Length: 346
Image 1 (cartoon, rainbow, N blue to C red):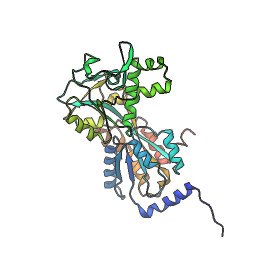
Image 2: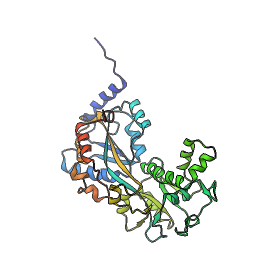
Image 3: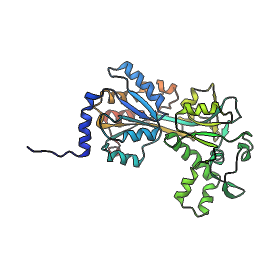
Image 4: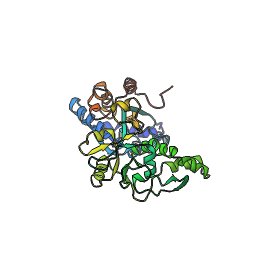
């Protein structure tokens, strides 16, 4: 008898083949920003199709992608939600575990907003430089790079309230944090002159860029590892608190929160769709192609998610703050054809 030695990937696929008998529902985990959208779609999918309602969990973009990259088979999730693009090291980790065919699906766009207690101090307008000066470990003062001495917002910008600095930002496992670091902290680091001061002090470019996105550790910047409800609870208990939220979450809590402009631009669907609002980001989910045809309803769920009637400008997701993707038709085609990331651009 001739025996065939299976590779790790083939063994994983063989394991996945048994999933049809062991699991009949789609399993999703990841971004807390994408969570409400995915939950809405999952519920509607369960009501309109002859498939079980998909199970959707949160945990953050990084945590979801880590679970996604654990391997192929019934004991691994089918879809990872993410409020940032998958990273090269995550793609490599996936490949090492046998997850070699990944379909990237962009569902639309969201904006990151700075919101505070509706009756709290007048936090209504920020520049990236303000956020950097408030939260960075080192800032430029009197032409010198020094340990951050600021305890009040008004100390570095007299147009801001005379209120204690207290910010609640998403932890490092959340996609929101990466966008916050690059679009706000890094931008503020450059405009305040801190980046140049770091380079002039002899820091390498890489070290200076890392330093630019660091946050102070004296208690005035607090990482939130949970979802936006935890950030909201922190704002509720701190009248001076500023929180970082997704636009959709803020829009569902306007009775409790007020939002600030960034660089003079109000965060709303129109300014995010046009790219005018400076702190916006695309939202994604990633499909494990090896599970299509094995986990019942997986492809159908993905196609339903990006249908015009769901993710289009007149769909229910837009009512909850999702900004429709102008290239949604291309995304629909990608899902229909099961086009993987490695096949794009070929």
